[in-house]
Length: 285
Image 1: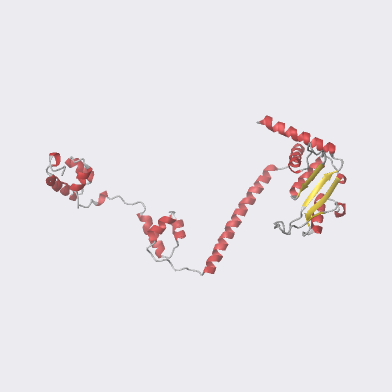
Image 2: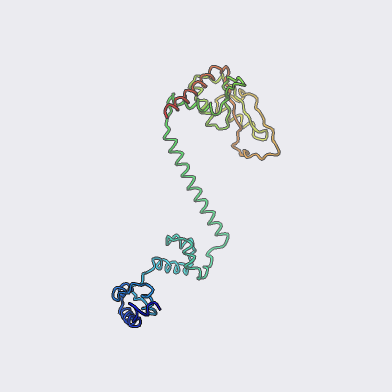
């Protein structure tokens, strides 16, 4: 052995002293300093077979959690309940209690499903309330629009959704089509701001032939503020049997198209205003 000579030649004598010190309750570090043995392997051999004193044992941080987890499991708690109670990971809970018998279910599968459905319903309601609260707060932030703000909104709205003139197709007309009643309402308010009277508007509905056409016509006529008879002839979309329609709910009302008669001059004003918005936005950056 490398310690059979030299500094550690009297190994057995060192071992007797080390064992005695160990039994007196000294730690390895204290024995090292006392005997001046700084080789870790040698130090371990000197006290081999002697248990460390209790005061040197470090308690494991999760021992208490483990004991609590086992007691809760014995009381019939599920992994999820124990995890929520102790604030630890589910994998740790499984490791600590997997040798214990699974608790007997306290309700039938049907009752478990009902509880799950109720929980999901509460979660859905809570999330929906959060959505609605966010929307209400955002709506309140807008408040009343000035004439200038409404004008700019209307120009941007038209340029996004309305008919536009193309170099290859000269169409200096004002025509707006949309299925969203809110969009139509804003567009009508914008036309009112520009003093475009209702008698200059030609309105007609576009809708699938299988929908409630009469209800849609009444809906859009009421929104515009005209009699149903003042609407143009409704355009019916033929049903394509190869496609699956998703807009089949009772609230489906198709689209409303609004064309301003003698609207070439208005169209030019819209296009010019839009380019002004583009220039203004770029200069702001």
